[in-house]
Length: 300
Image (cartoon, rainbow, N blue to C red; front, side, top):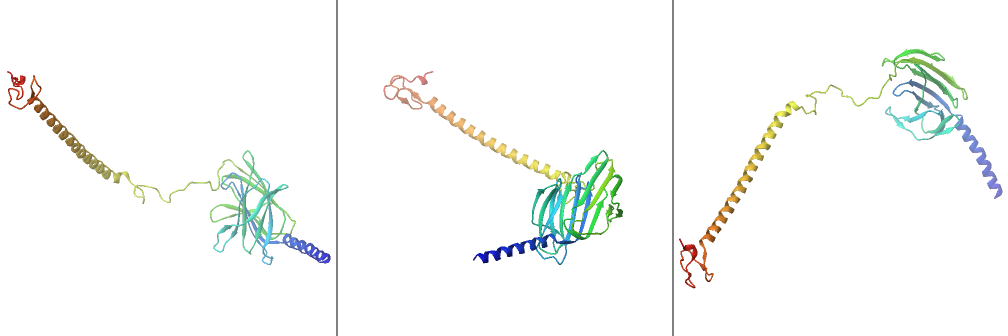
């Protein structure tokens, strides 16, 4: 039994170092890093697209390092329809002067991660440094730098040539380089600008065409005014009729009530009582029908 556990322990020691070594020896087939200074924030937007070598043993765990002050905003994979979908990853967590996150590569497709990194400001001058740490070998490494708006001077080391894109923005292209494992790639960027204009400032929802009274779904007051006035007139007419009807009913009730009261008073006035015995006399009686006393109301 002891020999069995010994063999199992030796097997684990042999298998796991081999697996870890295989994970660390992953080769990235291609990686393009785009640096967009002051794109939609007054900082550097870093976008890295990469794909591991096709002969890798999937799934593959990649541990990516980004600067400690960076703000990781996206980790995604390219879907078959050309859109990027959120990918599962672990982290980021602090590790010395870096932040690290681990991404499991399950298929041979393009993956992307994005983060913002602060710029250094010195008056009108902006300074930024990018570093690929060399954790993995890269067969084709490529950097594109977007020229900021209103820039008056720009320089970078190593120096890149600018190329014009279809959208009119200028990019600076490093060209493709091959990096072995452990070989770093550094870029130092400096530029000057006198404004805080962003390349793509955040905007609210804008209409595709000017809004006017003919815009679909928009209600024009000029077109609706006759209907509004007509509706108010109808309300006033109906209200007047209801008021006079209610007033007429109240007046009729009062008249009936007054007539009834008047009749009662007349009846009360016509009725007489004997001053001697108190017997109620009938209309036209001059003397009490009981005691014969003369009724006062008949006296002239």
